Length: 489
Image 1 (cartoon, rainbow, N blue to C red):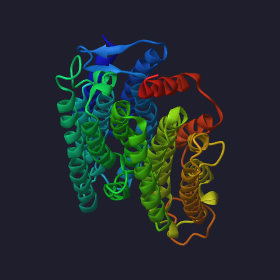
Image 2 (spheres, rainbow, N blue to C red):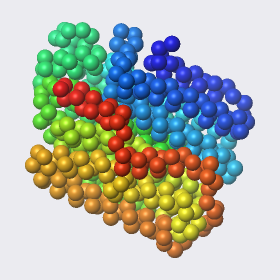
Image 3 (cartoon, rainbow, N blue to C red):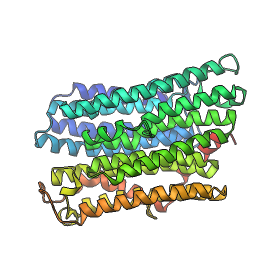
Image 4 (tube, rainbow, N blue to C red):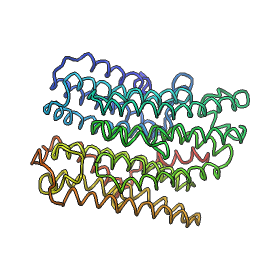
């Protein structure tokens, strides 16, 4: 069977299978891990075919996988697998503490496969209308992962999430319709296919394309968490379970960013790169400074990482704004670096909530003595988030500086440096407070987690360091090919 068809079938079928399982936690836990491994293996098998030069398409190019999509499919496979494994531990704790029922756990595991299915579909769609529909479907699938506890706060957060994202994505729908109207009858082939639109971008009306990009930025930018339409993100992360936050921040935001990047490529090749770069610089700068200002004021560890997600979507936008081959490479690399880092950060908050029974960092302290491994993992995520050399995010932020320096854009370098400095100061003050400070609240679990419980976090930490110090040829190949596709070289 075609590998793309398997990707379209397997996660959905596994979600249905999980719904039909009996209410037995050990069975649900084992099955969730096994099926997650199978799904990720299939996704990575498709990625390996792209790395080896294969061209994958289905249904007359309606579904396809290119090097750009392969990068994001890798994130769904790797980050998704490790978070799903950690979710079995987190849900066990929630079940033991009476915060959740076994039926809600089963629903969570089942919906996580449906969520994976919608994200994979959004990456594989060559038809821009179906890509939009798939991204909208990710909202519907993930809202129940946010409101899994069915209490008042998580339900309100779920409503806010679905309403704001759906309103935002309505602008992306306008962009889709306008782009189709501009292309229909003026280009060869199907006017709904991304590959045809990119190949014939120069034939499209420049004014229409500029309007398309503004709508796409508002629409996909809302879902990705770009300011000023980012307001759903902090509330959702604060109330949702830690694994849900890890999936949303580590994977889902990147799927929305992929939609925006595809429009960036079409419009840039239609009207020139100066327009899209200028728009993305404004968006990235606005996002960086708004998020860094709120970051300083946060004491809730999950809200702090939520504002970090917004900040790093700003970094990706800034990289797209700086542009050029190096800037685009940096922006795409940052998608992967942030995916691993933010998954580790949010999974760490699960451990931290287990230890202190609170998300308020002013009531924490002494974590290095209580749970040294969790403190180290938490520290690795912080070091990567602020761009310490040797960690993955440093690589992409350094490349953005390099791209700006090559272009002589010293003002942009200064703006970027100031924003990163604010984030650096805010993060380390919070980290030292929770890790080395005096315990101000109550310690609920005065011990480190088991190795098996920390295993997914350790694997994420290894990935963060590995991508910070090593160049992986297959991943670099995907990045290079994606940059060539966007720049049509």
